[in-house]
Image (tube, rainbow, N blue to C red; front, top):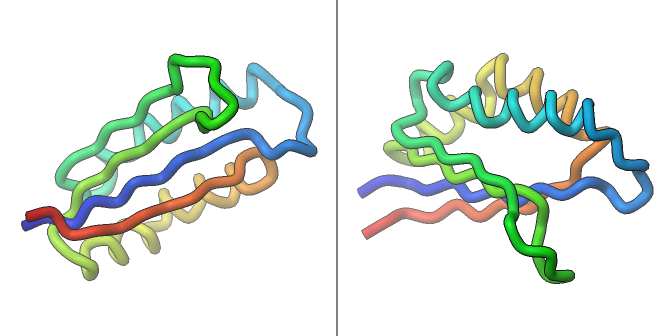
Length: 99
């Protein structure tokens, strides 16, 4: 069994779109997984359909367990990225164990 960490991101409603900043932030998110030893699987994708219910991006990470998830969440590279994401994006997460 693995623990799956799913996060959806979207630009904050009160923040003006900045294509260059968004590109830089999303490229960093896409590249982060292989840099953190606790990560066993990493997928990052942009939404492809223009529907009001959709968020802009999704991140799917797989780790061994809750301890490995903490190792990822508190890793300095992740913490640095989160600090840069906070002014631009909001996000929602779900963590669950796969069967």
